[in-house]
Image (cartoon, rainbow, N blue to C red; front, side, top):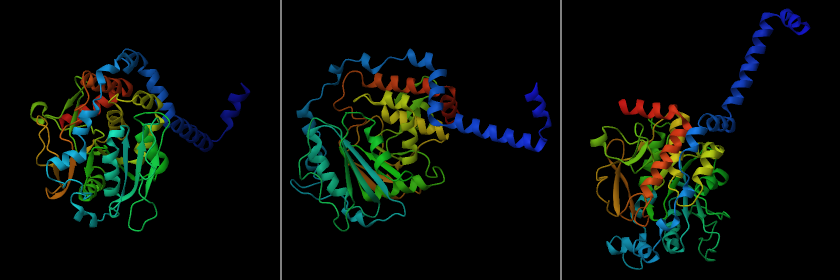
Length: 377
């Protein structure tokens, strides 16, 4: 009673200030990422619990064939198609290295297989020349059981070269490609994640940065080169087929993925999604990050235009990409496959579907409503 009497004597203006302060404290607490993650886990706990775990899969279905890897390496592909002459260290479209952009990207390359080191060795020496569009290169060596050769990383501090940093995590987690830039790059800068069997020219990097700075993105969204589609009605992952679905692509995969480091840091705070994305070969970390950005910022990804993309046909080793105005900006060279399925067998599509279902369960109806609304517009 004494407390209530004291409250009655407080002036209205003071009561208003107290209410504003309490509201601000509550809003700050609820808006904190860890708490939101806990709320999501509580609300969707039942839905998450019925989705199969990646531990339910037999790793034997993901047999890796080293001989096939050698045949499918980036350099061997470029040599066989005459893009590079045998034994040449020449980088395709090196004339684009003179291109500059007012924003520079940090390139992140993650690799695990010793068979890919020859490709990565070549890639690092090509990217380090792109001083006009690349601020830093982070190489994540995800195989703690194998040491890198002593001369693998080029000498640092050389004039007119991009600095290279190496991350050697103690565990083979797919999310290491997110953890490294969150610790080693500017917290708000653009991060470009590229697979270790692909080469992106300086012109294309600059073009992706322009898409990222455009009105459609405003440095907030994810920018990709490979259109993919998550069906909000069936909650399944599908290769992009706009004619059949009548909708635009809505998810970016990690083959070539550009976004703000701020988005990556936010994602890493959601330990439930991070834990789900960690296991090697779970095919989920890129989908989870892309859908997280869509859910968190309520903004759809942007895809760089290309005139030669056909989701039903394997692409050639060189893909040409266009600006928003339809002008050629640069190329991507790589192995002619998509989603890394040249060596993945068995449960690949099922793992992708489970990943999508898990994300819908985690984010609830909000994610579905955003994607449905986007599909109808």
